Length: 414
Image (spheres, rainbow, N blue to C red):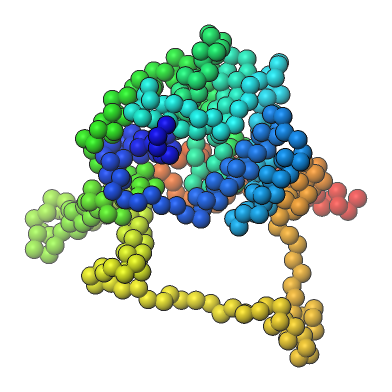
């Protein structure tokens, strides 16, 4: 495979399957990375190493040497050890569910050219047991929940893995299970299961779309998928979509000159309808995201020495900080202030204690003291995977929390 990155990458499939012009449009922009992306790559390396140690021959010396090397990386943190353990626990439980040991391979390169031109990708883990081919993907991000349901990236990986292993298994493989483990945002892994017939039919259905995206004759279709597009800030189609809110505004709030003649205002329509509010919420949310991208692009452009007419970069607000915290505190105590007044004694957070004790010991020792109350209601589009908020459920959760607290208090006293 000649290139390090496929033009139609599986990870960007949700974008190019909708905005078919995106792949060729993005080619003119340099590839970028971020600290979050690099942190994610490192976390994946930790996950891969632990999977290899668990499911392939690897001595402790080799493992420790390789792990210590990863831990020496500047972006490594102890949370990666915890989240990679959760990933490994999921794979271990899955492997143990089979009557005989399954095939387990990590970081499997797959060829996707049968469905997308010059396509290829890498599966985090492929497991084959019984009549099921399992694709498991680790996500280190904690900002955006990624669902396995209808996920084109996972389906493409599954198609590639099926093409790779099916010749060796004959007609044994009948089902495909695709799972996403995202421990920093989701307590339990989420999965989608399909038959191989359903998966292959989906693969056939995207072929013409992929060809259109690859050829450069695609269409620009702005939406939530713009988030990770390299050219999102300069995309004219995206700008047109959000500046079109001005037209919507004119229809709802006529100027004094046409106020008396506007059908949109005549009669008794001084208030927005629920349908209009729903539409504005969707468009306004995307507008805010677009404007933020535009601001970030303009700032980076100016800092790089170019001009954005009418704008400049200035120093933002900052907070005071110690040049040497330990020395400053020592000076405060030396001046006569009691040490007890200088320091605050606080218990570690729930997550920090779990990291300290380990997931199993944490659950056994203090699991009875843990509750997860229902979150406050927040507005979300209908496409959101979470269940709709119910006041009855909220009331029940509150009662359950109170009963749990009372029980813990009684147990502590006895």
